[in-house]
Length: 264
Image (cartoon, rainbow, N blue to C red; front, top):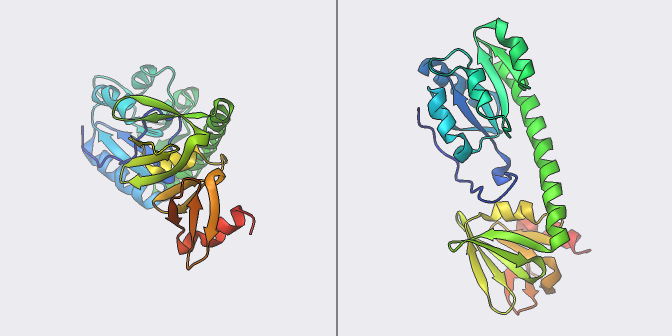
């Protein structure tokens, strides 16, 4: 296994991955030189794809895929111990997309049968990878949008959201949430009756989760429930007064969009 920086995104109990909107990728190739070259080409080809891990062993990669939960795997075919197609057979219900990277053109038909997004024949250029990345990003974003919409409808139907915490999972009524504040990779959720809970999801995850459910991010660190606004107080960015008396600043950058959302 060749280490690569892991994303700080928290994906616990979330059926879609909105964090920073980045497409997460894992690279698998038994040749370290090929791995390094592919990593560099991806960095040049797309600023929307983030390599979160690389492996020079398919069996080793198979042990970590569930934990890493990548959006896409760039996969070599001919490797010792386990070839690329045997690797894919270990994930019959896979949720990740696949891009086959190989020096052997005879595997193209198998790549199609495995529903690979693309088949890149080594050595391939950055331009070829740019074309692949474009199709890949479009497909994954479309899939995320569909998944997010379905999950939001489910949340609206039951009027609750699952919130992972240090104790387990709490199911919070959406209408009782006043506002949420970013605490780095964690989020503090403030509720009615002076209650609060610390969650192991970041604020960006909640912004995507509560999209179209009357929530708005008034500041890079604050997401509010619009149903609990009592008053907007004018200022450079202004501030909002919530139903519990809490006053929160609206950033100057968000002011115009916020006023449009509330009808001014």
